Image 1 (spheres, rainbow over the protein chains, first blue to last red):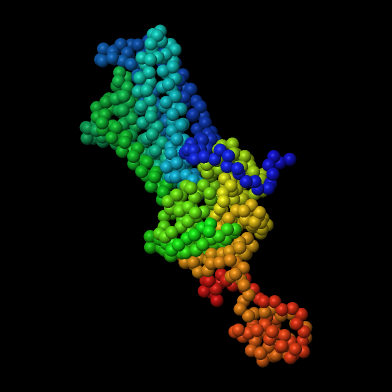
Image 2: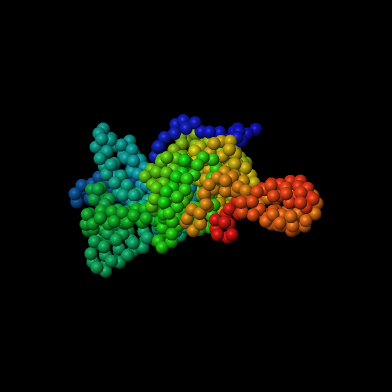
Length: 297
Length: 300
């Protein structure tokens, strides 16, 4: 017995509103991306692994961390939360790139392949709503990896600390810990979607995005070594994020990572500029492509 | 008027898509006719506020170039191309597009199921929409156009790729929406029987220009002085009598007599008396939409 009648019924427009279409787009796209098994696996396991990592650092590696802290405190102070977040970011950024490639690359490429844009834009939404919805989708997945773990680490520190005022004392550090992650989220979301908008095949878009990240890092390395000028690190968006993390997380050590000992010598202003240029270019490409593709389709 | 267009022009680079089109579309179902490349889809996209253009346009009293979102909230659009929001079951696609049209989540989901039942996709609504056949995708596109219960529907080639049965069912649905549910419909098509079966008026475009416009009944009125005659008796004698009166008839097949310019149909009766034959039936020959279309295209 069907629940609904076959006859056409009018909608009484109860509850009709002009909400935020970008939120509706993001919610639908998150469900769509979560149907990709690998994304589901990464999204569910990586934050858990990150939290486990922070727990291990506090317990199993506490002595070692303490030794490092002692050495670094002689050099000018240490912040344990900054240190852990810095170390975490160094490795998590590559997983974040992978998640951005998996979640962001299909979002526009598959819409283009399925010629879905006329369906979207025949509804009362703007190009901004569409792009914001897609950016929000990738940003949600990246937040699980880059913002949730710092928050968990903060909670672990608060719970394990013997000091009474640690929650309020470390709260500014928590906010600072979000900054590099937020920069990374904005950059990767915009870049992965910009690449997605120029291809109809999600796999090509994902490979192109990862290629851009790896290639720009490799090129920046070669240029820094060749020109003997750390300013060339600004060519790589990931190097810019690392440098920014050193800037906003003082007392986190040198945070060398894959960029070696020269990365702290990159001017922080240049790092912000590099990041801004990459993000702005990506958003501009995205906006131009969506407008063009929508008109053509 | 539901839609009024005044001196509308649109260029894509060197290509002129619309060249000073002016037309008025009233209530009910209107056919937008024209060969491929005539500018039908471009006109619909301008009416939706998706493309800027020169000229004056009003849709449901709103200027789509100034308030595209307000217009789109009241229009359901069924695009021509095979298009689908990928990676979702049919019910989710329709509910999602309902939400984009401003519906609350629960209402969108309920309406999605209702319209999917209405268009005959109740069995397939939980299947991935990408797996739908062409006919099912056409129905899904109609469902998403209906989900927010719009006042006006733009249907761009709705019977594309449908088998004969599917085509008849789709046209019946569209006809029902226009006649029983009070929807205003603009049906863009190059298939004349589709338009003839559903619409009460037409706008014919050719190379970006409006070449015919009006009520279908008016455009297909009696073909100036041609009558189909059912005769009992000697056909040759009757034709000879008609020729004596200045009229000409067809010697074979259905007997059609064309009167001289300004001729009185009473001459048929005079010819019958003169030729000692009986007229069993006389009715004016009506022009078909195909005749109107071919005239508009310059084919006759």
